[in-house]
Length: 98
Image (cartoon, rainbow, N blue to C red; front, side):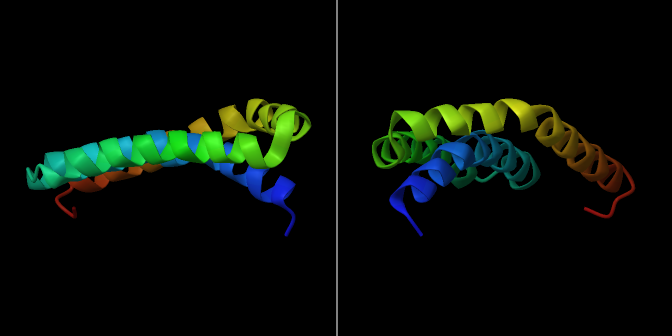
């Protein structure tokens, strides 16, 4: 695996780690009322910034442009998937299964 590919992967995955970590930690905090989940959400957001910086350094400007194009084309699909997952969790919670 080349460093360009690894850098692109870090840049492409960093929003998922950052925002996904915050959403999951908020969900688990609301369910369990444990403060550790708030800290884990903040830590995942910080980790996403480290991933972005490291990915940018490894991949270089050309690869970053390619990653932005890929992310831009697939953001709507990712948001739809996230919405479906959240609706599923909401329904399961109100049925008493979570």
